[in-house]
Image 1: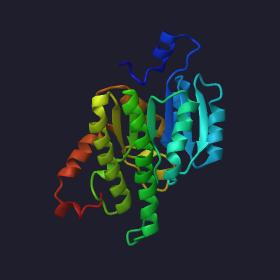
Image 2 (image 1 turned 135 degrees about the vertical axis):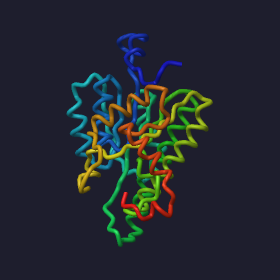
Image 3 (image 1 turned 120 degrees about the vertical axis):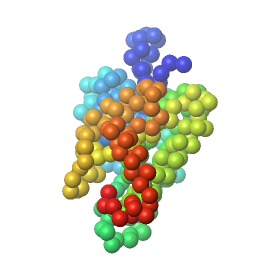
Image 4 (image 1 turned 45 degrees about the vertical axis):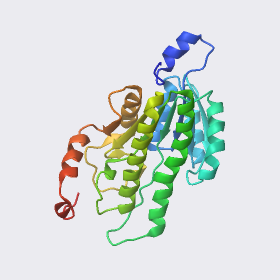
Length: 264
């Protein structure tokens, strides 16, 4: 089976008039999602870009009008899970079939140390977890049927432990990681890759209000690593940057009675 992340080779094999690979990025209007769309389109992919902010999507598509690939945009709020099945079919047809699906949507509202806001917590569950499940289920069904494809979910190092600063965010990322692992185990017999990405500090709108970023990387650099990981077969789970793998191994080993007193 040829790699789903090699559209150039596929195009050469089938002639100049054929389409290259089809990709879908959910959460594409800014940050890592927008960087992924840019890099895919410039590499010859036909990309469906989804997000809530229509103007951002249209600006992104206009920026990539001269790219070798094609960008189609659809306005979508990931909390509207009922709309997902029909929209998934629509975008798959719009890009001529899907080989790659990336769930990049996520929110991390500011939460005070003494704040317990159920509305904020539920919003994170809706976007970070429920939206992920709705879109990944559709991708899993398609990829299992066609016995190929790469499904990528952008989780976080924040899901490794239950830290004090934003309990709901940590919980949603931990649940997302477990869900993706389950999909990986379910789909691997069908030749489908499921990749979990665990970024550390990425310079995006989400982290703009944080006082200090540890080992920050740009959204472009993160996107390059994500696409390289999806193409390769070495990592099923990839920390971005890789040094977070060692750091998280240490953090996971700290006993809970000690960890609760640490401001990390």
